[in-house]
Image 1 (cartoon, helix red, strand yellow):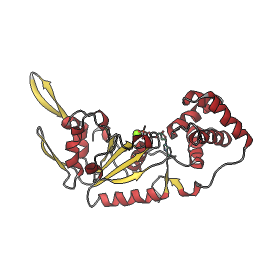
Image 2 (cartoon, rainbow, N blue to C red):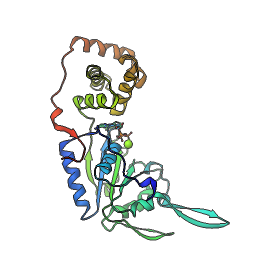
Image 3 (spheres, rainbow, N blue to C red):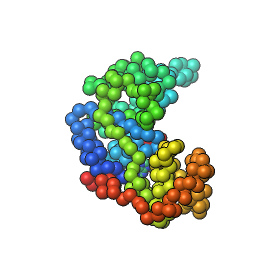
Image 4 (cartoon, protein in one colour):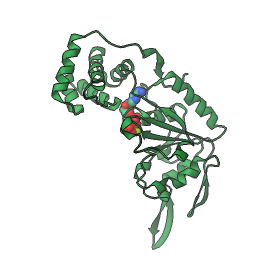
Amino acid sequence: MNKNLEIPGADPFFYIDGETRVMLNHFEKISRRHPVNILVTGKQGCGKSSLVRQFAAVYKRPMATFQVGILAEPGQLFGEHILVDGETKYRPYLFSEAIQTPGCVIHLEEINRPEHPKALNMLFSLLSDDRSVWVDEMGLIKVADDVIIFATMNEGEEFVGTEMLDPALRDRFYTILMDYIPAEVEAEVLAQKTGVDQERVREIVNIINKMRGHADTPLDVSTRTSLMVAELVAAGTSIREAITYSLQVDREQLESILLTLHLEKGLYDASKTSKYMLFNDEI
Ligand SMILES: Nc1ncnc2c1ncn2[C@@H]1O[C@H](COP(=O)(O)OP(=O)(O)OP(=O)(O)O)[C@@H](O)[C@H]1O
Ligand SMILES: [Mg+2]
């Protein structure tokens, strides 16, 4: 097997809400009977790519990721013409191999942003129930059994209306709408992934949540960014420094948030914890 088509390693600290976990299991089962496409949407850095990866890891499927965002023409994913000893030959790309690998998880990133809309044309036939596509250079390519196609896209409020996915394309997908993980789970993730102690991790999450919910200037702070903050704290910086260097934040805003937090220490929302679980092979 191509080394780019390996089963990814599982993230031992990846959390998912219980309902989505169960749905993913259903999708996996269905995929063994007929083609399944899953669209994962959510804000930047909320864990979309990680979810696809974890899915492949948990179900022991090889996986390959492709950037739809850079595609300028339809055939570009499949292969290219190269010159060998003065002769033109066609060299298939990893994508062609991946879709012909049984059980493979195909991850299409930024499916809503191809450079050219026509670039999606060939994907349409791949995503439909007959799962085959005509490539002039290779003939009819059939998608192998049990292949699951995931597509991910950023779909925060700021994207609605401008980057909407073609309805005919969206129609071919089951949809998972992801959100940032709740504060208590995020604290757990930060502690487990960076080794920062519970108290400081809670403080980090508290401050970040204040920023997210800030009345005047709410900030979209992703899980990725909060991990960057905790990583800096683990390396020895203060929380204030870590936040200042990880996100572009107005100093005054940071100060005022730190002040209110100081006043209401102990108020910590743990209400949503129970619904989240580790995404591993237990259900
Ligand atoms: N539920 C989660 N449990 C554990 N870690 C998480 C979770 N969600 C996100 N992360 C971590 O946050 C980081 C960002 O996640 P990821 O790259 O999957 O986000 P994304 O939604 O694909 O981002 P983008 O919109 O930029 O493509 C990763 O390091 C990931 O491990
Ligand atoms: Mg991603």
